[in-house]
Length: 159
Image: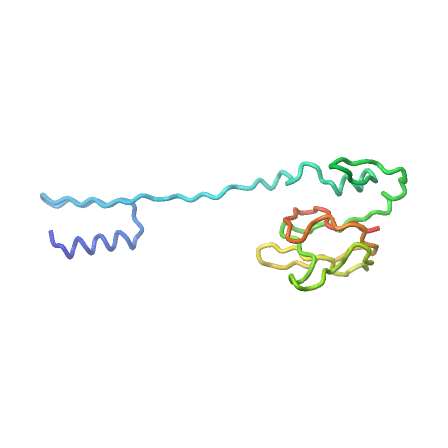
């Protein structure tokens, strides 16, 4: 068998990304093969929440305050009716400002009006501005900068 033909067959084998090849002519036999490394990525089950207890929802539902990971009810039940939350419209990464050096959109104590941008949630390299749907005073920012957030997860509490 011609050496140049064998070289051509080997080059074609490499270029076509084949895993096995065999050729038999008279008394000559050529077998080529290579291993495949399969890389799998872990799957994420988005049907289950990341946190088993949504602290912000519990806080709003119970009119409570957080202490050592437990929800304690506050005697003033009027406060739960006045709490409003700004929730994430998508799954993504939470940002408090437009850039790392920019000032945050809101701080605790800031007053926001309907339509004011309060944060950004990045998803697939797209920056999505989150606007306040109601006006009120920011009493708590529930998520840290650059943390992952889920769809409909409360981000900011307003009074």
